[in-house]
Length: 101
Image: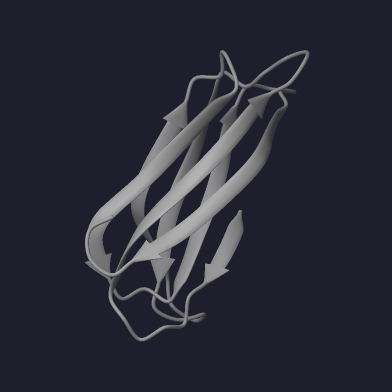
């Protein structure tokens, strides 16, 4: 997983753009990216949204949360299905918006 620290005192909407690369050899059957948020480092994370790829080609996916929230920490967790499979995350962009993205 990867954590984004966003300590601004504002409610924001979020967009995570993720570029996943299938590799030569055995690819995952599917890969899920779960975006979650927490109010503090000691608080529990709450799932915001999930994006699932079915790995047949290199893909760019977007998790778009248009509902503003006051989370200060955001975490993206990746879960792959397929024993011994390999997929590469080429790029992640995480953006926050004041209002609807």
